[in-house]
Length: 224
Image (tube, rainbow, N blue to C red; front, side, top):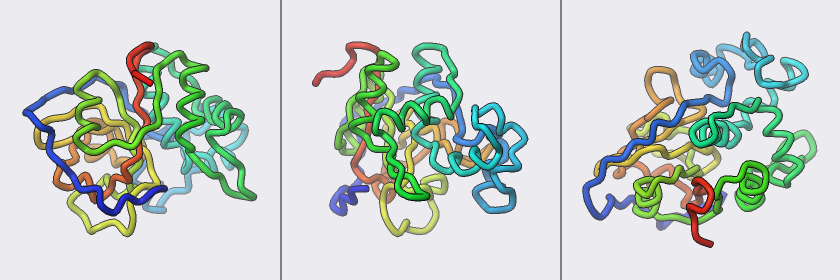
């Protein structure tokens, strides 16, 4: 992840209040169990709904589930614009084939923004661009009707918590903006607290945001 150490939060230039009614998806099939899984009290392989992911086994699901934040964001966008709900593992395999994920021994590199955006356009017919955006530009994209996948630190689920050690490493989907906060769907957010339409104050946002984004929109919504 690129760490733009000079990126500081800026409030939108004028008062706004836009919220897109986007369905929420967690990166684990049982969204109500996310806190237990993230805290280590429940292994992801014990998720009772693991089979809905399309994984061949609970172990395969557990390995992938920690890496599916970008896939979860795409599932939300596809549900919003096309009303479809592809299985998470089907999308993950397609992303592998497109070069958006790269196998690295026992690990995985990705989500890699540029090939992912190309895959989304070719496969799903949405407009998609990998970009570097300021917080003000993120707000403008959301106000303009787009959804924005944002590279942030996972601790954004607790925006008033300690300073993160770095920026980036996780993807959330920006679905709304006001003059004081960004609203995000967080695939690893905690139920009842930071999953759907989670409020991240602009004054805190820059602590987590790496400055890198993927802008999604309906066909023809984005310039080159």
